[in-house]
Amino acid sequence: MTVTMISFELQSKLDESADTLSKALLTMGGVNNELGPYIRMSAPARWSSMSLADWPTNEVLFTSWITLFGVLPIDLHRFKFEETNEQGFKETSSSLMNRAWHHSRLITELDEGCLVTDTVQYQSKLGPVGRLFLPVYKAIFKHRHRRLISRYGQLCAVK
Image (cartoon, rainbow, N blue to C red; front, side):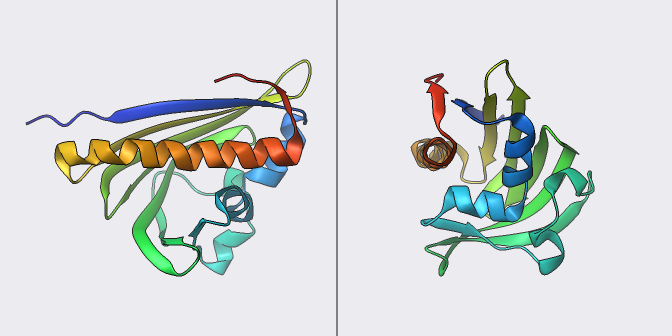
C-alpha cells in the first residue's frame, strides 16, 4: 500500500526586510516565539541560539520534545535538515507520529517587505488516519503566521 504525502502551504507578505526577518526567525527562539504560547519545541543548549542557517545538513541533529503549553509532550521530533541558508531551510525530519515531516521555509526579499512561505508535507505513521491531523497542522502554521503578522505587520493578504 502506497501512502501519499499530505501537504499544504502558507504565505505572508510582511512589512520587514528579509535580512532582519531571517535573523529573528531562523533560530529555535524564533520558532518557539511563533509557536507560543501553545506549543514549544525543546533543543539542546548548543542549538538554541545558533542560526538555523549554520546548522549542519543531512544528519539527525537531535531529538526535540514538542509540548503543549511547555509541559504536556505531544510528539518527539528528530531534526534533520536537507538545506539551510540565510533565506530559509528545507527540513526532512521524522517523529513518533510521522514517518516523514518535510517543512521548508523561504524568506524572499520583495521591493517592499518580504514574503514568508512555509510548505509542509507529512506522511503519518497512522496511515489514512493521519489525514485527520491536517487541520491541526494547518491551524498551527496559521497561528505562526498570525504571530508574524502581529509582530512585523502585513503588507497584503496572500493565502
